Amino acid sequence: MTANPLQDIAQWQSGTGPAGIPSICTAHPLAIEGAMRAVQPFTDLPLLIEATCNQVNQDGGYTGMTPQQFCTFVQHIALQAGFPVDRLIFGGDHLGPNPWKHLPAAQAMDKAEAMIQAYAAAGFSKLHLDCSMGCAGEPLALDDEVIASRAARLARAAEQSLPAGGQLPVYIIGTEVPVPGGALEALEELAVTTPEAAIRTHEIHKSAFLAEGLADAFSRVIGLVVQPGVEFGNHNVIDYQPADAVQLSQTLARMPGMVFEAHSTDYQNETALKSLVMDGFAILKVGPGLTFKMREALYGLDAIARELYPRTYATSLQAAMEGVMLYSPNNWERYYEGDDEERKIQRHFSYSDRIRYYWPDQGAQTAVSKLLGILGEDELPETLISQYLGELYPGVRNGKIIPRAKELVLAAVEKLTHSYIEAAYARH
Image (cartoon, rainbow, N blue to C red; front, side, top):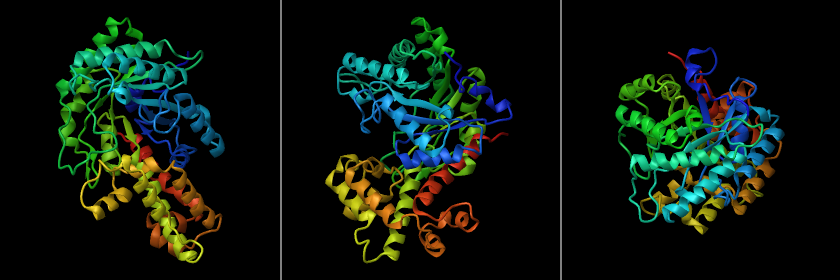
């Protein structure tokens, strides 16, 4: 087995390279390629790509991909984009019984064990253990000891499933995170994880691992998921306030070799992202924010196509996506509130970006292909880019962005990813 490049992430702050790393949590090929463009050739960072338990699992998840298929999928994008495959790190997020929590705990944990074995066997080398959710007949919130014991069981399953010659996995523990995909309601403020809770989580997991004879595996627990006070809802974003997290950050001195992992950092400004890294939140997870930027770019191109080809481009991408979402409302209906007009706005423009679940739909893919096809490889007028893709206009004017349809979409994702990369190099 080979060393994991994330093993010593807690020491990065004292070096001369990056102090942290962005975690790219998406399965959309354009978002993945855009992130690859941001990382290479401008940095010495690896590219950390993560999949969640609901998105990718042994049953296919909502992407229809197993862990091995997801790795192959990303590697194919890398080969097509000229990105070195050996710079990829694959991570699994919220690995636990969540997809099967409607089952009794014994059955759900059996499924979770099979899932993490599939992740480990496929070469995923960053594994977030999350057994915080109650299963059928259990309370919603479980005792810390139960959570840690189940996490240790999954770590044992992973350790027994490692591929020959692969990397030793590192583990992330802790579950005090924002709601996956963003909160449902407007938020005013969040409670930051207390120092006592962070230390207790670390100590209880250590005890559970040691009880299972997993001392070596626990030496590779590098991160703790906590709530630093960041979140987004459908309409608003709670920005990081460093002063509120001072005491939490100071607890890292009592947990050598550990960093914090910050979930739902989507839509944080660059100052906040840099502050997070400097305060020890070295792993910055971003997902919906990437596809939000991708959708912005696609909708901007949609408007440009209507301007350029009013006779031949009659049905817009936005109209097509509205039809796809109305036909299959399961992924947005219970998350968006208000009257019909308010829910329509949220379907397309919500920060939670639940439209991301619909891009793999055949109707959506056809509409995107039609849009990119009609614009083709033509260089689009700068004036229309200024009007409908204003954030990308300066890059087009200075020659850094080629004014072609697909290039503009990739540039939108790349620009956002760059803000995370810049934050990863932040130091006091």
